[in-house]
Length: 97
Image (cartoon, rainbow, N blue to C red; front, side, top):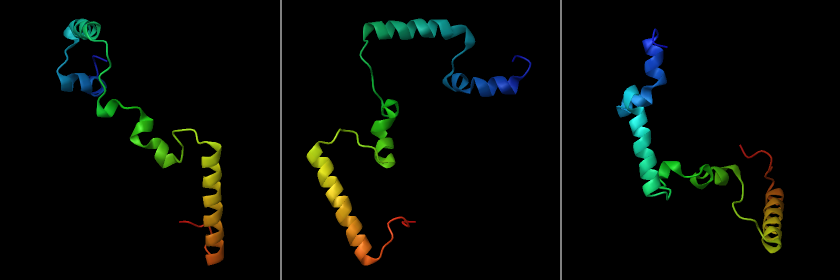
């Protein structure tokens, strides 16, 4: 990789951007480990949230909580009611594009 500087720069671009040199990585790791030992509680940032809390589940149609029998029954009745209304109005439910 030393003979291909462009490949090296693209591969280690994040290190270069943060100013991390190859000779001080060991010191950086020691500093990070000392900080973790001093305060082991997780620090959550907005970008480190799990993917399901950023809306992936909601856009994919998944439920985050388990529904009770009564809730499932109410959703089914609502869905059937909407389907019958759409059928009465002549709207095809498969052609929503």
